[in-house]
Length: 149
Image (cartoon, rainbow, N blue to C red; front, side, top):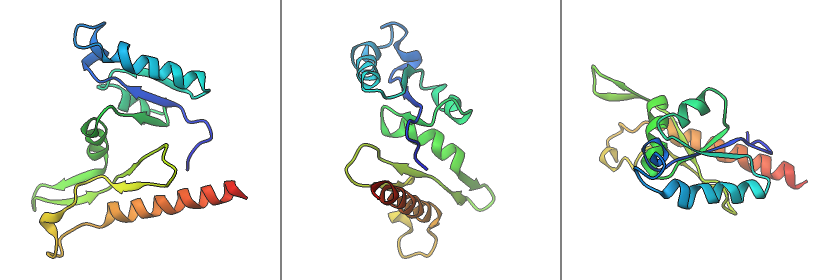
């Protein structure tokens, strides 16, 4: 369930967070000022953290949330942890993962795979991730309802 004060890791955009401008300046020009603004508001944000290690640090318990800089940067580690391919059949034995968009006035959860249009009407789609997204949305709604009382 959501924490009142989550420890937030912010991934860098560039390899090794830009290596002091050698690989890009987005970390110093854009990301670091945003982190400092968040901290000024009392948000426990750290970073930018090199994207090749930030997810391992979160998995190890150092952070509750990782802010990824773009779609695939966040989905690659999640799919690595939650998706399992059966190499004998070439089909997915497990598809687990929920994307949660934070900071919206509504609760938004989503599956962490594509639309699966290639499996439509074939009876082969795995509903696990959809069920997880719905279950998590219900938990978030229940938590929000309890907080409003």
